[in-house]
Length: 315
Image 1 (tube, one colour):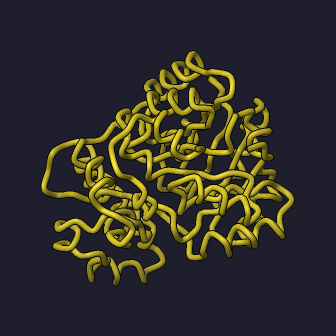
Image 2: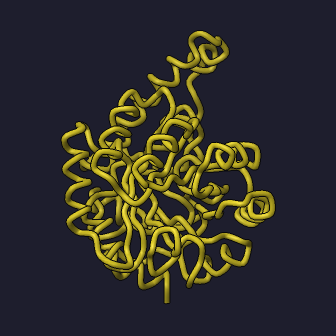
Image 3: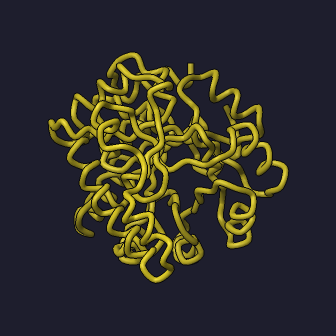
């Protein structure tokens, strides 16, 4: 499975273990590297810069041939820690950075100075062409089957569109739960895939057994969109609690979001409240179950070690 992604990251297989808020951790990425793929962790999974620095140093020590590690940065104004996180990552070093939800210009500029590659989440051609002009090393095509914040175009439509119009590699994100899905994405012109939800139900994942088991028990038909987490539509498992609280913004939020001056602050408040609710559900036993996942959990039949999930994906 030799592609432009395997060449860029010097990995055995063209797969990135996608960065997942609260879920991804050093153990998961270490096992991903041992399996011959790349692994990525959201910088926001670490409360302090010291914790982020320690994680980078541990991954650096755990690095094996055929594997790669990176970090995800939220690069818009809602992430007040962004610039300091970027500084620490560039000081310590890693193989790649994935940018999300904002302009990657500063990240590309600083990362390239120290030899770190930058891949950018995109959901349409216009933004993909923009990040290519800024110097991105690859575009991650977030399609409408991705978990979390997803795009609106199908895997085939988005991947094919970007492949024809970009000169940088396209990595397909969303809708991959087995080897056949990977082959399908590569046939659309992708140089690799980003896989998240199947790794939630891993032994190494840093979430509750209830969350992991939910990814086994529920399937694609149980994934719905909600505005109640970050203010931006996000996919979650349709648990009884999600059904109870609803998936739309409150009437107050809808009114305030029409005010240009207040819109940014309303979104920041909703993001903060939603992230706290998600964190409680992911790390503690609670009836308030807001579990983020994508439809690719359809292929999750048991809680397995990361190495076994990788083996399922490549064999």
